[in-house]
Picture 1 (cartoon, rainbow, N blue to C red):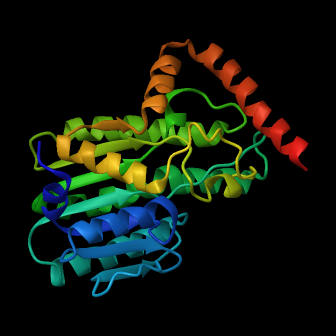
Picture 2: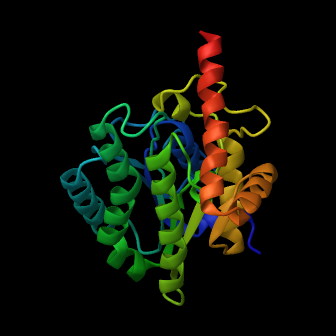
Picture 3: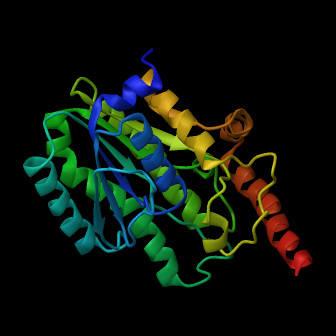
Length: 273
């Protein structure tokens, strides 16, 4: 199995969605440290504040929740790849996403639809538009799903469903790409130390500390899975156990169980106020 540095250095370019903060920023920073000569591209509203000297970073400002913005950003990225980036393998990381907590459609239907746009349509659209260039160059597509992809997530119904789509789409896409020089990897982290819970309307500390992982730990396990040629990775051994168990439970029962667990999160928040 190739080492992580060797794997990352095999890419001439790394493209990340949502690289301005959280997990996306960690992917950019780690890749840049291992492969400082690579060309980097970030798709998000704001430019990443990364303290790495001489980093060759192209920031393409865009709202990934809007199809027209994704199309424009993809066209700009394609022009950049063809005109500026030398021949070689490319890594695309579809990282952007958000969730929400509450009874559907809280906090609003627009919020739920924006979640579907960002979590589902944006990675499919971006990968589809870039696919001819990625196939011509070779490389990999990483799609950041979630442990929520393995069961219905009551009170986070839309979020869990979007991540289930992303997981299954990634696995099927990887099979379709077999032998093409391009492959896909689905990354399924559990609770991670980002601003996810805040945006989802949940208080910090909602998830048990015993299940939480740092962005650095998730990124490191992603690189290991990429180096090993895997199609899926659940980060953290506790998350691996939980997803394996939840996958074997009948879906209606899993939905009832998630309702009990996630309702406790809301009660925990209420008690903290």
